[in-house]
Structures are given as structure tokens and as C-alpha cells.
Image 1 (cartoon, one colour):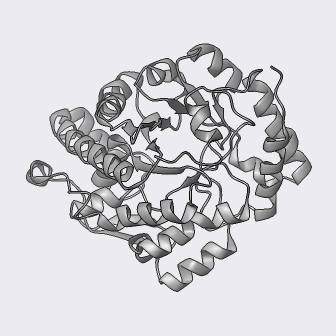
Image 2 (cartoon, rainbow, N blue to C red):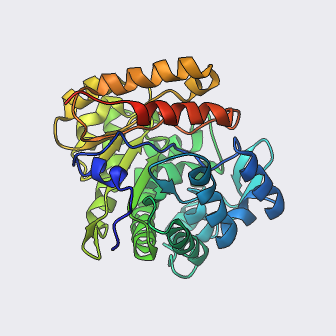
Length: 353
């Protein structure tokens, strides 16, 4: 595998020295960019954009063309897997994703099966291959998936939820059925990420967006255990190069040590935990990714620079093991010029040895 000309992101995840602190942003391709809004308008709707390899590739590259970022992340959606399982995904304006056939019946759960990523999700693999070719090894390409638990939340609830009433009813009253969903999801996610790696992804990330909604015991049983299973099944070497894997559990700071022992190379952090404290807790086990509050990007550029430096200083000395990112996805209301101020600050920062 040809090494990217800027491989700081990969080296940081492998805890190797870097030229500067590498930076990318969750949801860096999205509605805050006018060029993305134009692409989505041409597509007609979000799902059509996701299912068009050429347009998904275009969206993937837009933030790389605009900013000096250290990695590109595939433009796609975490719900492609349950959509391929036949649950009938649609996106409603102002309401987010909805499934026409949520998993509420035992027979439907027992009938669930993992899709073939090179068949039912071929459009994703084609987008990975197209983006990897278009990047021309300038920066690494990140592939991703939702975690089994986070996917299950949408699959059972039928969409987003404030209280996860249906999911938690299943968890406590019929844990066997939830484990059935999670087992199929883990099989599907493992195959999906491995297919992305085979198609050209140079790092992969698991988004466990709703793991933080669980108790400590439930998180270990219903979320982390299945992410461990996926990490153990990933193809971590491709053409002689290590493929790093990142796990991000929003609200997971309480369980940082357990996540760091999951088999991931990097652990993503939200903004509720001090980065320096997190580094002391995990030691040399994993790299850390994060963790600026996305809301900071609404502030003036001089405030953004100050807050970004606080995150960098919190991590402490030494130019190994830190990927700068937001603590969650960038807001659609973020001024694009504010992102430019953030990138300039992070790349201009020089740590003490």
C-alpha cells in the first residue's frame, strides 16, 4: 500500500512521532459547506447522494479541497447496513432517519441476517475506491460504521429517540432478542468494514453514538462486547500497512479504561472529559482523538484559537498519540471560515518535547 504523502494521522494513531498534531473533523463533509449543499441539491435527496459513488466521492473530497486537513472520511451514513437488511430507510425533512419496518416482533428479529457488503452495499465500496483514487495518496481515507448497539437503537426505535423506550424495554425484558440483533449487527459491521478496507480505506472508525445512554453494566454487555468482537475480526494489515481502528462512544468517558482495552488503536473522546486526565488514565495503551466542543466553532476566530490551544495544551507534551477532532459532529450552522481558523491554529501549534 502506497503511504500517503501526509501520513501524520496514521502515525498519530500508531503512537509514532508526527510533524504536527493531525486534524480532521467528524461530519467534516456536510451541510455547513455551501459546495456540499449544491451537491445535495443536484442529488435531489440525501439517500440518492449516499447511493451515488461519484457524488459521495465528491462530498468526501470537498473539505479536503477547502481546508488543510490530515484525513478524509468517506461520505456515507451509519444506517446503510440496516437499510440493506430491508428495514426501509427514509429521511424526512426536519425529522431525520425513519425505518418503515422497525424491529418490534420476535419473528422479524429471528429473520434478521447480515447483508453481503459487496452485493447489497456495493455503492459504498465503489465510493471508497473512487475517493481513494481521487485523493491520490495526499491524505489517508477513513472508512466507518455505526456500532452494533447504535444501529440497534435506530432499528428497534424506528428512528431517533429521546428515551429509547422500545430498545430499553427489549434490553430488560428480552435481552436474548437484543443479543440476537447485536450478534447479526456485529457480523454485518465486521464484513462491512473489512470490505471498506479491501476497497481502499486506510483507517476505520466505529461510531457508538448511543452507548453512553446505557448503565455501566449494560454498556459492557450490550455495546463494548460487540465492538471488541468486531475489532478482533478486522483485517488490520493491508498490503503490508497497519490499518488503525478508532472507537468513539459519545458519553463513554466513565469507561475509558475498558474502551482502551478493547483492541482499538485510538479512542475518540467527547468534550465532557479533560484530555490530559484521559491521557493519564490510558497511558501508552492507545492514541486519543478529540475533543473540542463543536459549539466553540460558533464563537469568533480568536476565541476558537484560544479554546483549541486549551485542548492541545491539555494533552500535554510530546508529539505522539493525539489526533485533534471535535467531541462530536460539526454543526450545520458552523461558519466555514471558523473551521479555517481552527485548522490554522492546530497546525500552527508546536508542543514541547
